[in-house]
Length: 109
Ligand SMILES: [Zn+2]
Ligand SMILES: [Zn+2]
Image 1 (cartoon, rainbow, N blue to C red):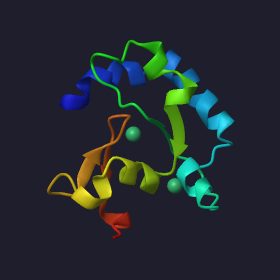
Image 2: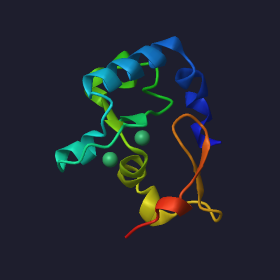
Image 3: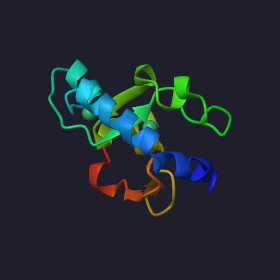
């Protein structure tokens, strides 16, 4: 599993705190929707510079508020290109917490 390196990080208190700070800063709203004048509750916090095994221990990347943005589910999928690509055959992908999520319900063009 390519995402395995981040499992421990996403279960750390450092990440919990960074995530909470980002959500509070963003008023728990999806920042991409907000830019279009739509208030959508954020369901996750995305890393603008994606985490890699090389940078995951770098606090300037992994927990810096400047690298974090609160997003709703659909905007997060879009930002990763998951909506268009479809990813796995079953329409399932792993989210950033390592959970399997379905893309079927919100497939739009
Ligand atoms: Zn959104
Ligand atoms: Zn993301």
